[in-house]
Image 1 (cartoon, rainbow, N blue to C red):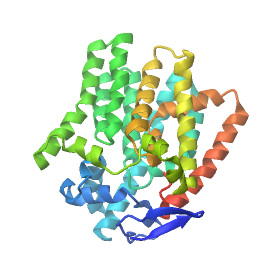
Image 2 (cartoon, rainbow, N blue to C red):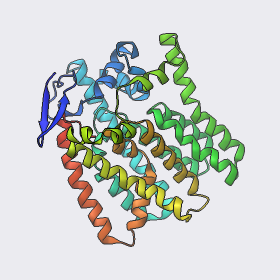
Image 3 (tube, rainbow, N blue to C red):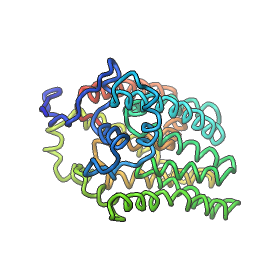
Length: 345
């Protein structure tokens, strides 16, 4: 392990995972990628904090990596994860465009996809992380919920809950819509189906460890600096990474503004309110308990962040163009930092 600096600031130590033997694509496997790669081949027992990571993405890599027998196992895993992420991202874009078009119209749908594409943490959609998997099932769940195929939406939401720890919160729009719309019983069943991803993973953890609380304890004991930690030690935290925190915090502040703004203004229809309420809860939870360097990554799978920005900018072309340029610059810099082992996000 070695320490490094970027723009005069210490990056801390590099994690104990070497580059995989893949020209160009080796930079896809960084930081928490080691957990996904290890779980895919060795299961959860090989990591102390492995149960902080949900099983769907490692399971997909485990199924797909034998398709690449011409390289070593770790490289095959990276190829499998990369190829799956491209497929998942393509599917997510289709579902996100369709649901956004249905709720807001084609102009805002196109803008939302553009903003998602250049968001500073969007590079996580291609690296060996679970964001592409999560946004695929979230986008599909929202689309089918909005098109009245409620039970199918609930099943997809269950898979979202097995993609990322906060994925189960997508149950919120299902349950809120029980009080606002028809198909109440179906939406209630679907909402509880999504929530079932939490006890389902807890039961699996129990079969592996004998501890039903293993996943919760793993998340609670993981080393991280939350937003409270950051504000309690701002001088130290800024001194160890001015530029990384700046990119991350700019992105998340904008995300929060455009989720909270329509809620505060009270301009949301009964159709949109459940979705923005869910987005607010997700951001509040990750603000309280999530790693501060990952805040912009957490916002990446919340479509309302991009709905709000696209809707606001639909009558403000200069603002929209400014977002595109600003996000693009930060995305390029963030990608370079992350690939070179600097803790950008």
